[in-house]
Image (cartoon, rainbow, N blue to C red):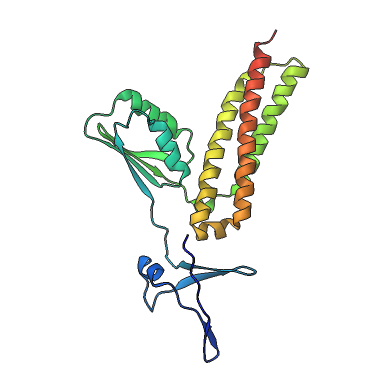
Length: 233
C-alpha cells in the first residue's frame, strides 16, 4: 500500500484535497467520476465508485511442475478469492486428475465446474458473496464442532460408539465452512464494499480468522479422539 501526504486547501467555504494522479489514472477516473468516501473516527477511505467488482480469474496450465499439486493450487486460488479458475492443457487431462479436481469441488462451497472437455476444465464461484454472513458461518462451524464433541465424550463416558464413525463426515463440513469463511474474510481486506456489507473492520477480520482456525483444528482433534475411542476395547 502506497502512502501519500496532501495539504488541505480552502476554496470558498469548501475544504479540498487532491487525489494522487497515479491512483486516478489506474482507476480510469476523470473530473466527472464519482468516488466513495468512508469515514472513521480519525481516518477516511476513498474508493473508486465502480458498480461491480472486477472478476478475478486464474489460468492454471496443465501439467503442473512436479513440486506442485493440482488440488492445492485450486484450493489456494479459492481461498484467495478467485471467481474463475481455468485449467488448460495442450493434451488430454488424465481421468485420475479429473477425479481429483471433481473431489476438490466438494470441499469448496460455491465453486462448480461449469465447462469441461478433454483438455480444459473451467470452474466458477457461483455465490453472491454479499448475501453470505460470516457470523452465521462461524456459528455453524461452532455448532457442528460442539455436536462432534458431545458425541465423542458420550462414546467415552457412556460407551456409546454409535455416532463415532459419523464424525469424520461432519469434520469435512467444518472444513468446507472454514474454507468459505477464509475466502470471505480475505476478500474483505481488498474489497471495501464487501467489508461494508459484512460490517467488518480489519480487527474483526483477524478475530474471525483466529476463531475459525481454532474451530477447524478442534474438529480435526475430535476426529482423532473418536478414532482412538472407537478402536479401543
